[in-house]
Length: 402
Image (cartoon, rainbow, N blue to C red; front, side):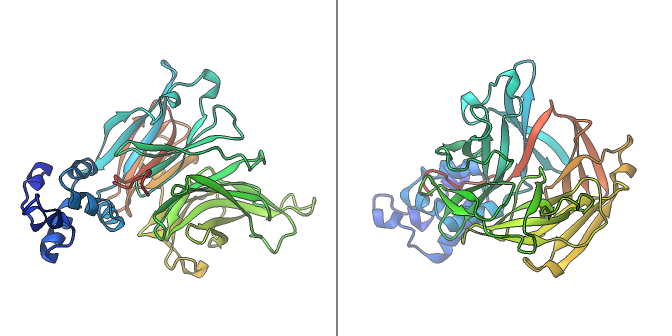
C-alpha cells in the first residue's frame, strides 16, 4: 500500500476530524492495530509525511514502540561510505543497498554540515564514524584539534542532525575509543569516549542527547590480574548487542621489561548503556592470526571474526550473551578461492545480515559482498577511495525530541 493510499485510509481515528476526542489514539483496538501495522511497513520518509495527517497519527508515530516496530521491519541495512574526492578536495557520502542480490548505489549525500564537506589537503582523514544505532550515526571531526574532536549525531534518512557540545575534560593524547548506543529505558542516545590505555581511574566521557551534555565517570579495573597493562585497540568500529557497546582490544601484562615475547591476549570491552558500567569479555582460544580480531552482530548475538595465517576467515558466535563458555564456531571460509587475484589479509568484514557480509580489501581499495550460504561473491570495484564506512537501518528515531 502506498503512502497516498494510506492517507485515504478511513479509520475510526479519522471518522470525524472536527472532534478532537476522535483524533485521540484511544480507539477501537482492532482498527488501531491495523493502522499501526500498515504505517510501520512504510519507508521512513513516507512515515514522516504521515505525521502531518492528524494529531493522533503524530502521537502514534512518535511513540518509542512504533519507532522500534518500524525499525525491525526494515530490509537489509544500508551501507554508507565516507569518500574523499581528490579532484575537488571534498568529502561526501555514498549510500548503497543490497536488494535482489544486487548491490547498488541509491543516493549520494553531502555531510550534515556544509563545513564538514571541504577540507584542506593535510586533513584528509579528519572525519570518521563513531558507530550507529537505531538508524542514528555518530561522526567525529578532528580538523580543529586532533586531540579534542567535535562530535555529531545524524539520522541520514530524515537528515536530522545534532552537534554535540565540546568534550574538554579528557586530556590524555592517546588513541580514543568511541561508541554510540541507545538506552531504551530512558529513550536516550549516548556517546561514550575514553582513552585506549584503559587505566583504572581514568576519566570517561558520556554524552546524553536528552540533557545535551557530557558527564564524567571513572574507568574501573578491568585487569585485576595485572599490576599494569598494555592495551592495543583494533580499528574496527564499536558493535551494539544486548544494549551493550563493544570494542575489540588486545592486551598483555606491562609490569615487567622482560616480557617482550609475551603474546597479547584478545578480548572485548563492553559498556552497559543503561547502567553505564564496563566489563571485559574473554574470547575463545583460537589459532593466532596476523590481523587481530573484528567483531560483529549475527543472529542478534555478539560475534568475532579473525583471519588465520592461511588467510582463512573464522566466525565465532556467543550463544548466551555474557557467557564466555558459550562461544561456538559458526563459519569458516577462504576468499582466496573465490577471488581471482591474491586476497589481502588486511581487510574488514561487516555483516549485512546473518549470511551476507561486506568485505573491504584495504590494499586494493576494492569492496566485495559475499553470501556464505550460496557461496556467491561479487566484486564491487573501487570506491574513490573510501576512508570509512558503516552500516545503518533506515529509521524514524529522533534526536531533538528524545
